[in-house]
Length: 502
Image 1 (cartoon, helix red, strand yellow):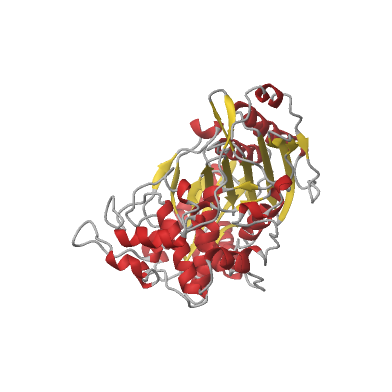
Image 2 (spheres, rainbow, N blue to C red):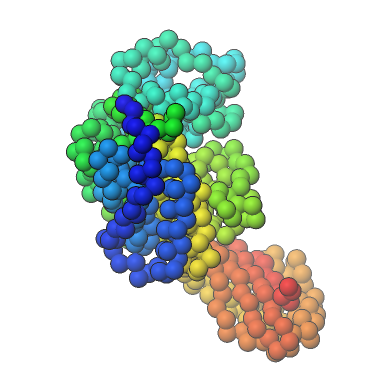
């Protein structure tokens, strides 16, 4: 279907529709949220996207949501928080977590050969005689040896299951041996959909509905796009020949596990909030529907890391990220944002992106209805805007009793000038690495430089058995680190005091 190019001018006059967030945004700076909206709306206009919605999830709630443009050009219905968008490859995280749920229930093993659950794979011809068989784990982490299949894989979404079986039986080519490198594969996730069906005895889409979507209250989310009322759906368009053209709506099929979900901002926020509640690890009730520990496994990669540039405007000056594909997410360590889990969704008629910041309890996402117009940059720019404004504060790691006792001993050693006052807290290696006389000399020399110090500052834990501290002194500052040994009672294996320098 082709939409007249005369409508292009009308799109320029669309009114941005501000939505009332279901939860007050008092925890967020109004100025920061205004900047988030500015970044998103500028991207929508510059990328010539008919409609887009974005949301910020924090502390388990959708604290901000806003829509702009229209969900369909013909009727010009404005985008709302309930408008349904296809999220393409952001579906993969649901698939990965479904596999982990089956593992938790004893229905499959990640390290079992994939052919255990998909018999058609027994006929695969591997690229070398010494190639290992594909495991379920390789399919989740895109290390099965299949060739990158964007955009071919997108168009396979409605493939009937019977035809998928014929395809697998006819032989699947490899681009490299399994478990030798990461290469993104929609086919691999389609196979995971088949594994979920065979291992659970339930159709893939129904398993995801029953196991994840319904328990989370995501009633509007489904793999079956046309089952939703037409007035709720964002139609997908591409810009071609100076006019909008409606992309065909693809039904659910064998490749739905790689990118078939349709959802709204209000529904998707529930998923993001569920993911974030898995961090940090803690005692207490685990409400599910999948264990917190299993959710945290989504951040585990396959040991094929690479250096990445942070997306967005700050990427030119930001430190490089070490990242890899984990399970349904790209996992990377950012020196300012901490652990990041992100994924884009590119699809005929749609583009989307999500960024989950487990260290801060924050998630940001955006959904759009133009072919492959993934709003990656503005999502990351929004996160950086929140960081710069001080709205990302991070989880506070509690000080363990062991670290507290050891830190008190470190303070006594510095104040007295001798580590011997803490002999009962020193591990067997401590005085072997530097004897008491050298410790006394070094502490005295440091005190001569910085003068009297206020040692009342608390230790900043970096774990249950390690921490850092800073003391303000008369003529300088002292920075220190403390590391405990893996012994049954608290013992210090390493300790440092040094003068802070610019």
